[in-house]
Length: 313
Image 1 (spheres, rainbow, N blue to C red):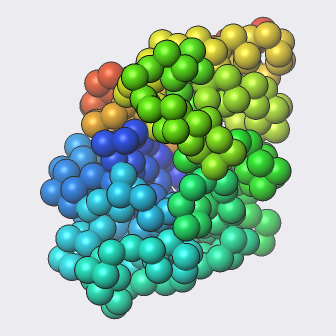
Image 2 (cartoon, rainbow, N blue to C red):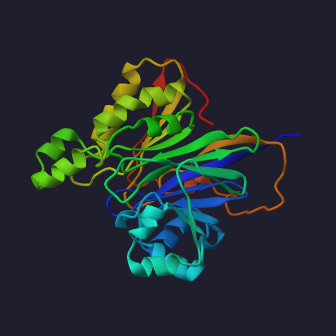
């Protein structure tokens, strides 16, 4: 007998002040990056009714401080398994390496890690760190189905990113800067060139022009992620993405388009899944969440209707 369950996910924090994404189901709860302090991370989880002691794993995209800031203290206290590529680990500060000694698990692109009923695969992304990866969260054992895709801190939309994100129902995708705002900003020219480079950050324009393809291939909930506080606004990011989606004239139903807030949890969104077997281990923390009570401060939450209304579950 098949049972209906769901994978729930939200952004806990986004941008240069720190990045962190939560994804969980009945049997597994995962964090992607811990860019805020350990204390802030615990408090943010509390806001979505999740305890830090119920986090089963942490996956790191790369070693920049806005993605690992809280890692050392968090691991020293809670000993949560941490997954990252060797190059990122090797470029951490020595005290971070020491803290991770007991819990580090090295992964490589194409590796698939099973956490409860979830499967996490990493893929290579272009960024100016020692190494950088994105993650795909899938469910199912025989023929895993993609549920959540994460692509942040990316200089351009590479073939690896497109192939990995294709088929994901929920996607977190970087929409870092508005090109005109960056051009006219007070940033030094060298920094502007770094941001615009193939190993920098994705602009609103580059993000938006790829969304129709992802929607054609299954994406129904899109969260614009890692917006710059100096060279972007949520209004500009949403406008560019919304226009691209509408201009594509896709007959796919309703697409959710949101912006991850900087310092607070975004709206919890989910994708329903069918499971044949009931897992023996059952974690109750996500089962009774009242999603409408989760803070939606500073989030742009709009539905882009494309010809017909459709199911967003």
